[in-house]
Length: 360
Image (cartoon, rainbow, N blue to C red):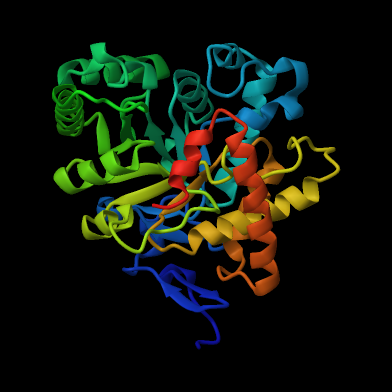
């Protein structure tokens, strides 16, 4: 084993040995490079992305901001937040700290997220890749199942956010099943044609989709390799790859970049409420780090997307990136117990569908 490893060669030492990135990339070609951050290749896009990225959801902000915070992190009430000085100050502090630590991707998947992050990132788009999805103007709603209309929706969102383009437009496919084959094909055709048109017009550098339907996601990866360059898919500390017919068979074959969403299973992994004064904050921090390390143990995952409520949580996930990938026996037992509790909580909440992503 070499005595000293150069991070520009992207080799990480772990308890399980060496993990080398597919290619060597010069430091100058990595956006917002930080020598203490690991970077992974985002599939066929060729982008080198930080091994942990920032998610748009801010569900855990209530305990941090108190009564000045509105909504639940993904509803109409969140539109009030982008008018709040306290909220914008928090988002600016968190994203500034993320940038300072070498994080170079933020994912926004709802109108308030797009508007908030475009605002706090003004003047520093050269530091971070911007992922975009305006779910209200995408084919989960029948009236948006047309390629030209999808692109018009993207144009409207860019204008509202003051953006000229996005680095990744990842259309959110309908979350519920579509039993009618004709309508399903309509969704696929509109999505793929819209993504291609947006790239051609320079409104999106790269494209992909997000889906909670594993079988459908695997199918579109296999059928549309030119347009599905990146996918966003649930991937928690309790996710396991199927030995046969796994979605990762298609991901590896088609060289698709993968962002893992819901790494903490909608916060079901944690015991506390993420407030700074929580009596279990230290244990929850440890659970978060174990989860990040476990997820990064799958080299097919480019990066998990974590929602971060404060700068301390940024420090915690960055710390996890620097720790060894392979969990020892004690850590594995600890995480297995946390995951068992996590699945029990998921079954009691609105995110029961996450159990469908235990085996992928």
